[in-house]
Length: 474
Ligand SMILES: [Zn+2]
Image (cartoon, rainbow, N blue to C red; front, side, top):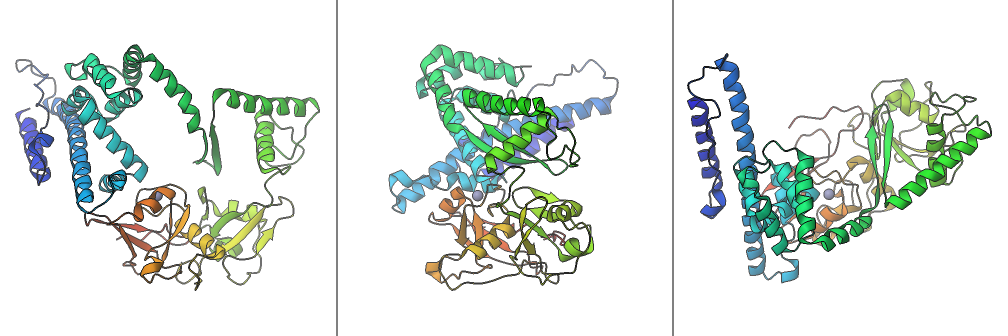
């Protein structure tokens, strides 16, 4: 036990020392070291096992304490950045830009999550001191502190402080309580303080309606819609009705899960088919919509097993790619062009844009432009190479093709000088102190981008490996 306490003290000291450069001392207080829960007189059955459990517990408490410390450091960083921006003449309304993005890079998180972590830190440090104290002393972990912040987000500063005081998380209120109990306690306290705000918040939730796509196993995918309850119920009822009437009329549909014709479709299958038909406006599928499938010529023509990449989904098996193209067997190779001519498969009426990787370098075949704006083909090309936003840890879809070295600074409209960015990252890159450049240090042809932040830190982002090429280690 003593050994573990010593180790904890050493790590805590090192942590404080490492973080203390230029930061206020008040930002760096770790919570108190908890007393030993094992009575000294009682000899545990196995000292080794008991020690290991004790270590796990101590480490867990340290994680929470570190999270609390990170919250304080994030708030201090936000203040420092705002002060520097004010000095540089940035108007008050624009100060604080890029702070969340820098926190994200330092914490290996997406920019979106970086901004939320900063919001959490500010709420804890300025409005919920008792929740912060509970985090620092290991009584709440970062997620549970986030729940308390989230459930009180609609309240005024005064009401939120009052709820924090009422819940008194640092006195052990939530010992042994799970996520649901914590949410319920915070919600009840918030409702008591300001029932109208809580109701207004529920009505605002409708603004967050959205549709998202994420991969499911076995080349399936989840298409999810977050909808206000009435619309969701109505959409589901419409699909149910379609399924009922199809089955009542003895539906034999375009095939069940085996894809063979003539099978009676299940209720769920009819609903899924109807959903696709109504959204795409095409009976039986999705003709006229491009699917970007990146695969090697060996996969396409020679039955190679190297998997392909489908934009918006991810890795798909080679056989699946060939079947979608209607190329079950090897056919004579066409010249490697990119993006190539579209192939229409008679039976599936699926249009695919053929895109090959150059066999020698593994890079998608390139093309340049003298224009300032990226022409459509070059855009598509970079979108397929990058797959998602190129900021490290950001998985958001690409919305802009950015000149890595800006056009006004002599940057060219080339594959090399282009990078796909999401809306938020494109905005951040335009803020003062942010610079990107293309570096290809691995010599493997994978496009590598270096992001420099206002503090002078640099982060690298490599385009995902193309089919047929293993990711290189750097
Ligand atoms: Zn992004």
